[in-house]
Length: 114
Length: 112
Image 1: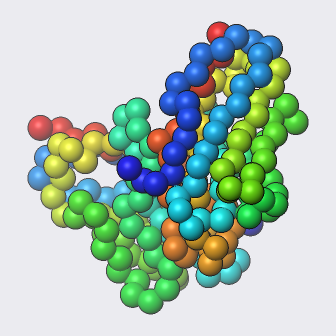
Image 2: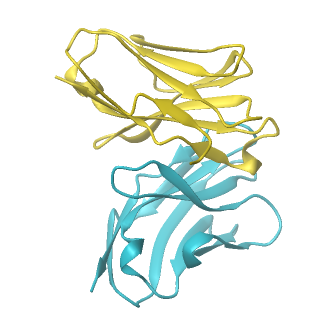
């Protein structure tokens, strides 16, 4: 157990639908990062939150949004889903002092859009 | 901006042979460097990291990597491959508290 919890582990939904992925960071970590892993794009950074504030944005589609709550858990919302959104979505967290302390990943949510 | 290039999307070695997975990075400032391993249907597990100090970094499962600034490389090695090492390996770079940037990954196959 890495200490980063992602739910659900698997999600199957239809095109056009909306889903929410949840991430609880490791205790003491203030930063949360979301990544998408697909066969053709590899591991792509989506977005980072630090203590409730958006810190950095990557290749995140406008149909996707995220937030980090006061208890530091984060949610990634994916809407108007397309077949191409099928992927493994990872959450990672890190210590306040920065990347030198490493990034801890959750086990991921596998999203299948049918 | 930082970037990572992993040379070879697939590497195959015999059990007991040397494992060498290559990683080159690009960064305008001193980077943090990482190797992660991903077993089938699992998440990413940290193998080792370089932040500052000693350039030869030892990690879990007998792996080590050497940071060579002059070559902008951070190659991963293991003296003797084991069947359980078969997995996908990712090299990654970050600067400060910024996001991790990953390479495309190298799939390691171990032949009996």
